[in-house]
Length: 188
Image 1: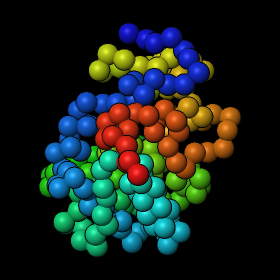
Image 2: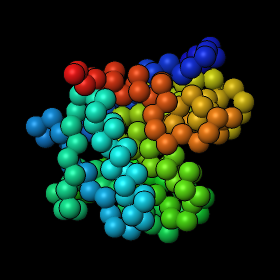
Image 3: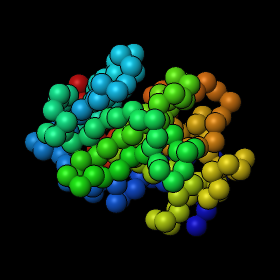
């Protein structure tokens, strides 16, 4: 059922119970291990580390970096091609055969778009869905991500439709609210 358009996306419309269950199954002693492949530029590897650390600081789940590709829960890769069937796909988050979350980012994107793609795909691994997905019975504005009624990146990094503000490279308020609903928030 569609929601009424509001100032921001309802955080509950960004939560995928299936993705949350998958990620929760990877959590070991309340942390997830992160591997960043050397296929990324040094600058993009630093960005991913900053994103993960900043996310770690706000959520009541911990992340640890590892150099072991095999012993990691979430793995970031940059590749020339993300999807063999579709050249336009710029990122994908998926479960591999070893029960690891793989985040694959298409190389040669404009840096700001690549960083939006990284945070977007990281959102999927942490349990977020697109605001236009209706397979769980809710969506925001429209199931077509490209129409004006659909959410934009001004509202959530999980949208496809670019907004009017600068390209986000970190969680928007609705993303933050959805992530803290899932994982709790860090108490200082």
